[in-house]
Amino acid sequence: MKQVLWVEDLARTDFGSIFGPVFASGRYDIQIAIDPTEAIVKLKEKEFAAVVIDIRLLPGNDKRWIDLYNKCGKNKALAQLGIHLAQSLLRFPDAQIILKDSEIPEWITANHIAFFSVEAWTEMEHHLLTLGITQEAFIEKGPLNKRDVLLRLIDSVTSRTSK
Image 1 (cartoon, rainbow, N blue to C red):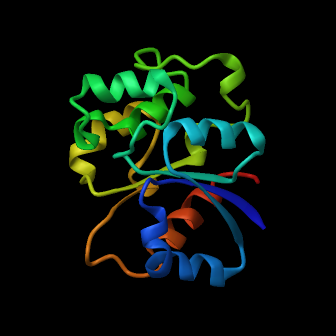
Image 2 (image 1 turned 90 degrees about the horizontal axis):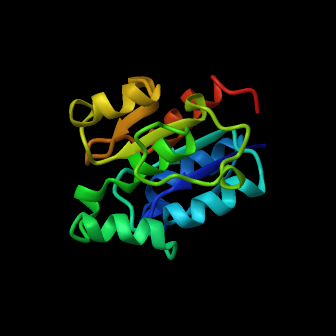
């Protein structure tokens, strides 16, 4: 089974609605990280074929993420910690959080990362394209999403990665 990390603070509430098709496929073992702090720990533990990130995240218990979140008025929509997480992991020159080399897994590339968030592609396009994240690796959450939306996104990412 391919390993997938889903970085989503509300993943447990989505469990019944969109996890079902992923588990039923039998192709993926999904782990959940509820914030950037937890994601960084899990990313160092093992290699993942896909890392699906929500844009609106709470900071967790790392002071760097808490300070950035507070600087944005403690507002998940304004802080966009998911974007900052990707920038940090991909060593983006203008990243707000500079991770230590020991915190960044050697295997991670833009091909491993996808976003599943309430923001529209048009709102995030500039940030994501700058990181090398294409529209194929982005799905906007919404009431019209089909139950297999997460499975399709993961399939799209894992088709580009070797693991």
